[in-house]
Length: 230
Image (cartoon, rainbow, N blue to C red; front, side, top):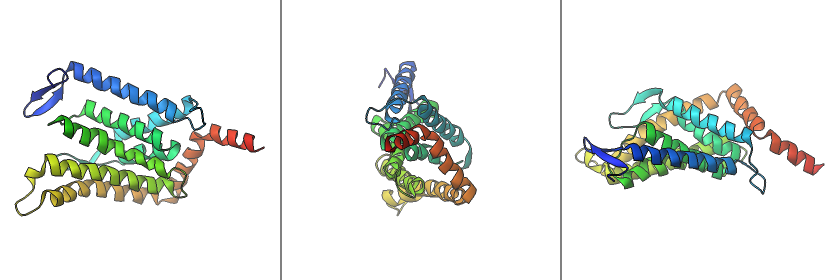
């Protein structure tokens, strides 16, 4: 731990070497996204697809800093930041979704780390944020954008609750189990953001706009499929 992280006020902060490692991992995740955004059997690299994925990660990072409601011990209702990560999965499938979500988690770790142990780091930043990428499992479904978002949020909630039970259960009020406390705590801000996001997505103009974006993001693949069909 001493090489990559140092203890500061009961929490660990990355050292210079630690930040270097995290940046390298972030770049590796972006490179992986380059290949996984390709949809043909050769995983053809597409600059356009990479740009769309990178824009989504950037928007997620920016909107995560716009906090509508912040919890006292971490976590916040943000300006729809989770949606932009799940949207990558909706655009390009589960592999691109997972790698983009991993890159986002590493970016969160670089900018605002809260670390008490390596297992907690993995659970809160790698697994919880990474779970948003499971949205890609629904990329081909009729209502894939909404279903993928629900799946991603539930995935993040699962690992957030798990982290709360294992690493922060001692903060549960007397008479309340660690599981119930963690579920209520994490479910409150994640659920509130999900409700607000769905309220926006229910607006026909917004929903149609994102459907149009998916077409533009995959326009090359659509043209290739039409060419092969002809």
